[in-house]
Amino acid sequence: MEQWDPTAPGVLRLPSGRLVRGRGLRDGLPSGPEPTFGVYLLGKPPPAVAWDSRWIRWPDFRLPADRAEARGILTETLDRLDRDRVEFACGGGKGRTGTALACLAILDGVPAGEAIAFVRANYHRHAVETPWQKRYVRNF
Image (cartoon, rainbow, N blue to C red; front, side, top):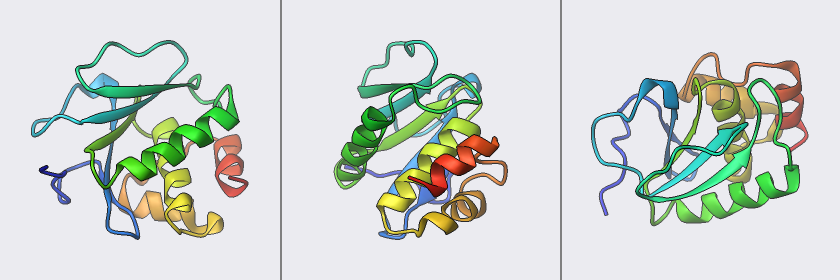
């Protein structure tokens, strides 16, 4: 299966070399191949998509409503990166998406104290927006 273009906007290469895409739902679906698995980080159910997906109830500027469930979905997602084109998305693609990508990076081997800087350097410079999102990543 064709993977993401590693040079495309929003595509993050994890230390293992696996690729994941982050985006803002308000920006619409980017050109190129569609995801085969998506994780949507929203306070209300996400719009229907044609691919397999999971919803983490996560209000804007906040943290996941169920942190154990969020960890389980992130762990499942890490396993799927070898066989799926995975995307993470929230409204704007920075705070919740950046926080989830930082946690995914921790699961892939980035030290918790370096995960925010890793995601900001390799995904979006404004990723992980709030003090409590930063604390969530450090304690993940």
